[in-house]
Length: 242
Image (cartoon, rainbow, N blue to C red; front, side):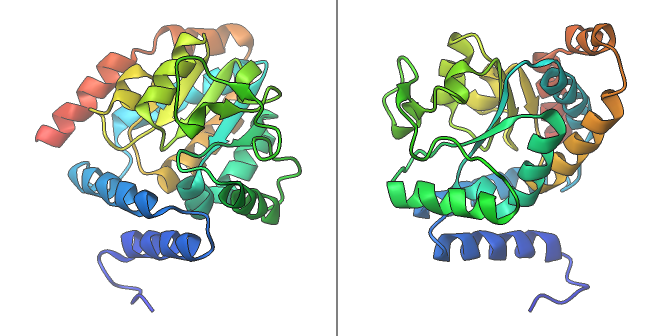
């Protein structure tokens, strides 16, 4: 039991959720390590959503609303930490959800599917239909659903690997990353990078989608045209250096 007044309560609670996901077969051993690395960067940005991240969230919302076939890519950590938010966001953008795992086994893919369906997701891609392949990618993450990521025009890739992010960009897909490390290849290769902790960023993204839904297409395109990911990442690096 984590005391209500513990200064690290939120962080410790997320650790517990991740460990629970590990015990249930959602999260890999390596996923626990990756979370710790991201947590270190969260300390550096003050464990709060900073202004550059808010700019990225607004651009991401615009991109998802403009997309004809938006897809949310979900790995074990994302499913363990934020399945409910993923389900809500997919509903708000009329998007698809696809399981994609670096350390992929059929059992893990099915566990992630189970977690998503347990929070109300009707259809989960990438479990029994990962028959397409991302060119120039050789990890298990190359396996994708034709109905989902393969034909998507915009892909939200939270907690992503840099090589797959780069491969998706080469395929002509607009990529939106959620990554606490502004120096990572994922952050630098994505079109839009939200440098923020996943469970903080997703509710804000959902809220921004709701706010922008009433805007016309020209307004949404203007938001994207005025967004500069390189500049936003630079602003985040400056905050870390303070």
